[in-house]
Image (tube, rainbow over all chains, first blue to last red; front, side, top):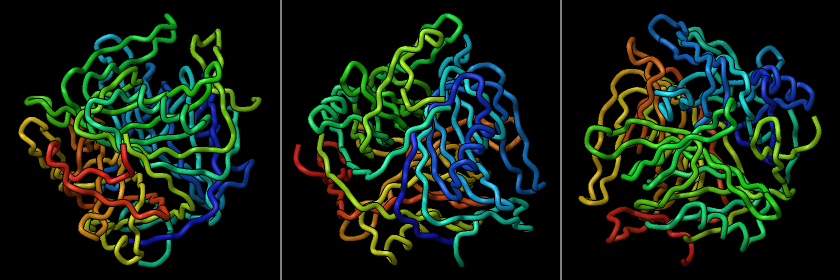
Amino acid sequence: MREIQLQSPVSYVLRLERGEDVFETLTNFCVEKGIENAHLTAIGAVKNVKLGYYDLATKQYGSKIYEDDHEVASMTGNVALVEGKPFLHIHAVLSGVAPGSENVCVGGHVFAATVAVTLEVHMTVFNEPITRSLDDEIGLKLLDCGQE
Amino acid sequence: MREIQLQSPVSYVLRLERGEDVFETLTNFCVEKGIENAHLTAIGAVKNVKLGYYDLATKQYGSKIYEDDHEVASMTGNVALVEGKPFLHIHAVLSGVAPGSENVCVGGHVFAATVAVTLEVHMTVFNEPITRSLDDEIGLKLLDCGQE
Amino acid sequence: MREIQLQSPVSYVLRLERGEDVFETLTNFCVEKGIENAHLTAIGAVKNVKLGYYDLATKQYGSKIYEDDHEVASMTGNVALVEGKPFLHIHAVLSGVAPGSENVCVGGHVFAATVAVTLEVHMTVFNEPITRSLDDEIGLKLLDCGQE
């Protein structure tokens, strides 16, 4: 395990509007504010979600698309720097709204999502920048947080 | 997107007791402490849960009732002011305990829940009040957090 | 409900490595740092998970084992002292990676888990120690946080 210690958090409550792209909107916000390290949770509803999972054996992501509205039952993510730019890593549990799938959950790694209704994000910003670098063995950009 | 910046968080660990109404107990706590803006997560177990989803087309919530005990696999919420009083917005993922539904998840917007066993809430309180106002187009009270 | 007020949070971003035992690694970290009260969330992927639920009627936990890789769609937990040592209480929602179970969620109380791929933990540490004590009526060690 690696660790990085943080202090002096500043927080934001963000209200994303219907139709906004979650990744574009939050990434732009981080760029504008100079945010290089943050943690976030969110509740609300999203649509046109690309939700996936990583297959370590093939070092490839798989994914499914969920076009219709889903409640964001849980959303957790972080912000780190990749090639000097804020990069969002977000996982979520979505629950169905459509008849026959009410409250049924799907979850995983969020590749893309559009706000449906509203999205209420609580973002905590930290004082220390944190970066991600490609780990060849894993095939993903892992957080650089100190030495093992 | 709209934003509000926050500082000086104070946190609480709250242990809710078996049989307590989650919304009544947490709302009363916020009133007593004068809490006007907070973020919370929780784990534990609940019963008699009314869990729902918003249909933007009809501007109406649908819901289902889950009477038997469920683990709170995830619970995320916030506190804002509606008509001057603390208002809780909570989403959750619940997992089954009863034979045949063990670990099976349902999720969504929590309308009501009673504590089963225990509920461990971590609430972070912020210095700036935040309010909700009805958005006619959406049909819901959205967070008022600055201008777009 | 019982409460304890907290201040002066210090946070850590922790990157757990593939193959690390989640409970052993995080418990050792808390021991080394003298952490007696913390809150955590995490995203990533795990395997060999023992995931369960508490049956209040029998005062016994049931559980199921999930051997193959799962995304950690949501993970929420806390640290308190039991017999003077840091004790982790963690709930999670896991989503399937294997063919046929992609994005399908299971959730509940995490008894054990091994990191698959990576696990990104955000831990907030508080200034006040918090303990757990056995509640005979419930059959579990509940958080000691002030008087009702």
